[in-house]
Image (cartoon, rainbow, N blue to C red; front, side):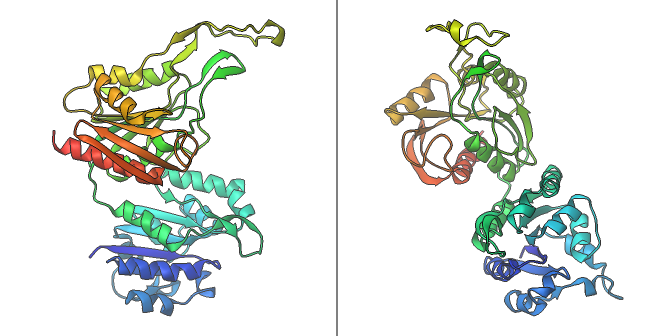
Length: 394
């Protein structure tokens, strides 16, 4: 049976950690709980022992006179979860401060770590906390964003601990079998911007959310992932090489430089089809604006990839449409030599650009499959499952 360490820091949300420990145990995992001194002000070791059937540890156990070195033994685990993770704990963890049992074992843990912050809205948004989160993510730790809602102070804002079921789902994703272990996956995401002058450009509403979800799903399946990301306000995913680009030409150049070394290419980006024939170096004055703008076509990145791909590579494209989605997706599948095209109607509520969810049609040479409505992360996992299956057959 796999083992998980659940760390609990101080905060009203600590009561949810008891439910999380219970759900982890029900999912078939041995759960060792470590409480900080502040956590003991809210919950007791006995509560956790009752739901896990195992001893819960506190700082009093750190310097035991006999037995193995506790923090080293606990760190040899499949996953460390800290829920709730207070602002104090995040700041210390980001700097490698190991002043208690939980901080010490986290520093010794070479495996996967999932941190689940919970605090007041102002504390979460404070630059010091955000710096700590960025550093932890850069170090390869997974940090969930807190939820919005009613806070302990009586105010509303962002800072609630995600519900135990959400944390459990993320933990199970992180523990999932590495179906893409050793594979190299290239993903494009977001829009491109084709500048007319220094202040005007042609673009679209894509946020990059779908592509980031695909990249994260590939990473969690064990792949080495490169994400070519157009302009996006979303945070860069951790554990993934991100190549920031702006224009379609820059995106093509980035893809061209990495394509031949990848095992799979998933092209989710909404790349501009046209760009101004000339980009002016100065702002066009309103009085000088005309009614016509000479345009030229950009490179069709997916078509190029389909023309140079090898038989070992898996190619997945997207078709964001407003008309006959199945017909357009099948046409793209054939013309651009893809293994699969993910079609979606961007005019449908809860799908397409800037939405958290999507509803898609997976079109392959073998047929069609409707997927969703579901979160974009779930859609991304389905795409990566398809990629893994195709790679196994090659």
